[in-house]
Amino acid sequence: MDAPPAWALAYADAALRCGMKASEIEASLISKGLPPSIAQSVVPYCFEKRFHEAKRTQISADRRRLFSRIASLVIAAAYLLLAGFARGPEGILRMVLFVLTPLGCIWFPEIFGMIFRCTWLIGPYTTDPMPAAWVVFPGWFLLLISILDAIVF
Image (cartoon, rainbow, N blue to C red):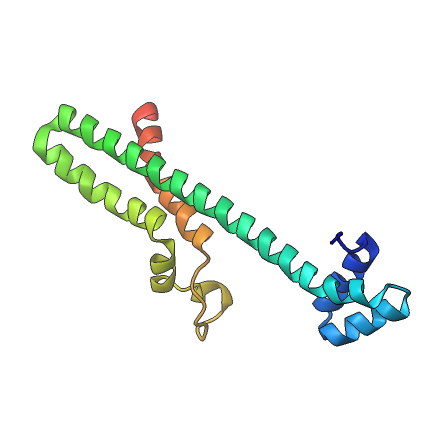
């Protein structure tokens, strides 16, 4: 079976966003001249399209998260190696203590977001966690600030 016409998909998508029911959308499409057999397939087609779009977005987000985590581990491992060569076991221990917080922010932003709720922005009665990006970005900043510190000082 062919895909429904583009105008019908655009109409159905907009109608779904406005809260119309599937039966209302089908009746409206039939009144606009679309055959009933095609009108019945428009709403499921829209839902399927939304599902695949959301799935692609989730896969992309998962890949970015995995890359971020691997990169943070590589940088932390480099810090530990350099600290071991420069200062020995004491330097490694200090560096482990330093990288724990940034790695925690990068690897577990949801947990840190629940701990540090954004009450300072919204108000004291919020139960919303801090957005993950607001936790990951400072984690990367803390992790990379040592490179800047080593270059400048």
